[in-house]
Image (cartoon, rainbow, N blue to C red; front, side):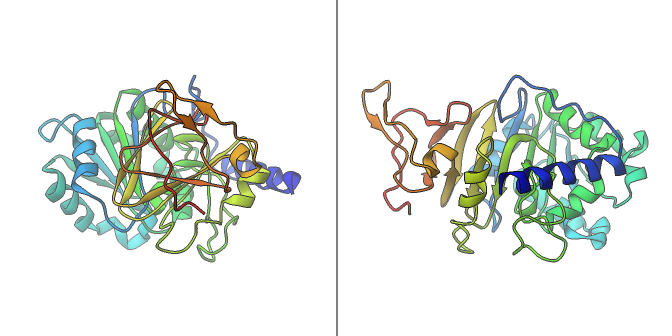
Length: 303
């Protein structure tokens, strides 16, 4: 099984790289999150005022922020989908919002196309099908430009498909449908390195889908987000925002090897005796050391 998963990872990488041979620089001292900048990853099904407020803050404030909206996940008709641009303006108060859309790799590799990203302080990936984003941007100059937004201290936000694409392994990336967990597209944009991300978690009863995959891929951290719920990732620290829960899938937790430890406050902190555990609004998690931060307590309803 491990060899099969490794083959799929390599196959997705080399197929994508051969199609769009741009060397995207992803080097970082962090294990998972961006060395600079921030990620906001939303599980779909809407958002909350607090999530949008944090996005505005990280993008530089509504007067100075310059946002690029990526609509590839919604399909070709989204090239003219100004409704997403108008939504961003309405909920954030930011007026400098530009729509960027292509399904052409040559265009995605052009300096002219990426011009708006060179000044952007934030990027928004809307929902749809995550494989369309990969087909449009993976290993292109545009892909590199996304990383450069982070390197300037900017923020990347995405919902649903725009959440999953931020991982390194592309979950539910098959062109035939989202119920195929490991599909014909397996490489994400990897803003969150060494990760696999699912969304609509509890709403669509997906909470057990990542367990076996992470069991066979111990180098990856699995993250499942319920609707109207997000994680803010800065360096290797994750913080939950929103209405519902985020599930964490860690190899040692799944295999029962996670150690009980004492927090700085002297509390015993053991993630779970189950194969995953939930975090809720305000809780923080150390992605590098795979531990819950501060005095946060695990939701007792984890299964």
